[in-house]
Length: 469
Image (cartoon, one colour):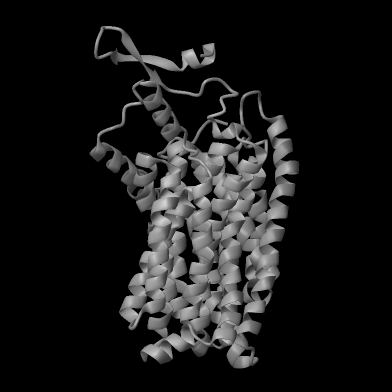
């Protein structure tokens, strides 16, 4: 065993047959340890990156693909438009709260267990949605499908951090993972529209989800565990060494609830940085979810588009999403790289340097429903810039709670906006309804600019550790 590995063992108690101290396994056997996922082959890393990215794609795809079947759900179950749209709302709420299921599984059994355990349950509820004979069953199954699908999305970022170094492929891998849910939700109406035209039955929308999710779940069997904690636990067992002691079950559960629920909710009330960013991104997501029902209403009722033709309009949003990824990469390698070069040795640039992408993206949101490319570009740019800003600002566990706070509010807005979209368009008219959303986005536009200017002051007043820059 290398000297590095020896330093990573600590005395912990005594053996059962002598007073010889046992050693606790705490780290890898040196930098080249083949058991470290960061030392996997490039092909294995790509495969292990593709699986969580595809999970993120298919779970968010399920949010919007359902929108193509709204009219038929109303007719078949003799229900109102609002109740039919609840199928989108319930699914969105499930994505927001689902990560709380994955956290204890990941803590106890590793990240791969989350993929293997929760996704088949999600697929079963997709099947339940397709077999539903009344709206109650449909809504409950939609909610549970996303609730058990969301954990696979939540642990994906952890999987990527386990296998990539940030400056050796990690940045690109993270970018692809982050863009996957945006592309999934935007592609749903296109696939759903043509599915309805060719199959003529809304239940096929659920079968399409299963056809996507099933093979991806099978793919998750063919790469190894990536969690360092779990891998070292297994290695310690193989070597007859004590693993790192686990905290008591109740203490672990309390910590998970603090990180994923209690602290995020508190941050939404006491942290101006978290509050402002969460409101802005949540509004943008709300508009995106509103588009899922607004495009069919506007393009179908006014311009006579078919469901498939309406879905084609979402291609513009997808193009904007991809362009946002390019924008972020360019700014990261230019403006942020310069700020990093100017930072003192051993220090990172102020987190406000991450906001350039969001500042640019804020200009695209007001275009709203009238031009898909600027809207898709704007919402994704805002998300990329502000998420990296939150992570750099709060660091470690506090960053996880800040991101969780954003997710809770984001998917709450995503659940609510579709419910009032069509009534708003009906009462105000298409022009004024779209303009109202545009006016609100103009009011929120200064947020990343204000944070760039006043962020250091707000960080200094935070009740949480925000790092030193």
